Length: 216
Ligand SMILES: Nc1ncnc2c1ncn2[C@@H]1O[C@H](COP(=O)(O)OP(=O)(O)O)[C@@H](O)[C@H]1O
Ligand SMILES: [Mg+2]
Image 1 (cartoon, rainbow, N blue to C red):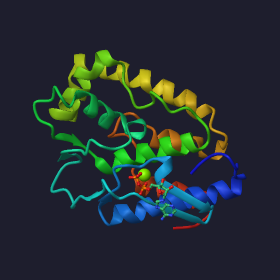
Image 2 (image 1 turned 90 degrees about the horizontal axis):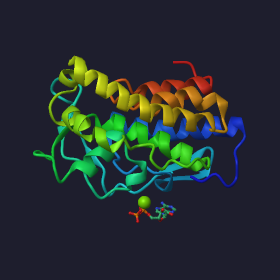
Image 3 (image 1 turned 180 degrees about the vertical axis):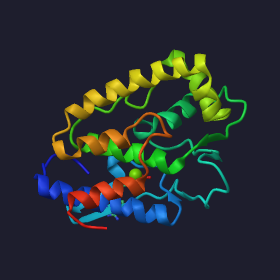
């Protein structure tokens, strides 16, 4: 994917649909790609899109209960395109008592697809997955203890909201520069910092079908 030859809105809708459809097919097979970047999505034409580079991908069986899986992420992927939770994980890996974290790997890929789309349209995505460094300790708690515990504890909730809002505002400003207005709201849902609130690939696929006027 690159932004050199700019698509019209109709072509962009087709390309977006094809990309999301491909990741939705992976999701239905419980496959996490883990290295989603604009370089690993080949676009031959709006209709012909290929996801490549499955070196770091893995199958996640249906979770037993709860939203979040305890996962040992793979470290050797492209850092620029990681979700904020995984980027924090790579920065904290040396200090984590347990390298396993509780997060949703499929929603992590959704964030990376969003960053890939911004990047492909010429938007600088550097720093869009990094919390202020003073906040790492809170994110570490979020990833290693329990999301609800952190988000519902009043003091921690305030810190979490500040750090989330700071990064979210930066992301939202970048989305404003995105050249296709019809996709901005969808991108905002994909690039949600809070990984519980972030849209699933299934719900983004619904947006994609809506753009194509495909009825369920
Ligand atoms: N099926 C393919 N068709 C065309 N080009 C491809 C294909 N697979 C890989 N490439 C090219 O080779 C490059 C590297 O392949 P990739 O599988 O992403 O390996 P790496 O781990 O080095 O990133 C890609 O960025 C792409 O340009
Ligand atoms: Mg690659």
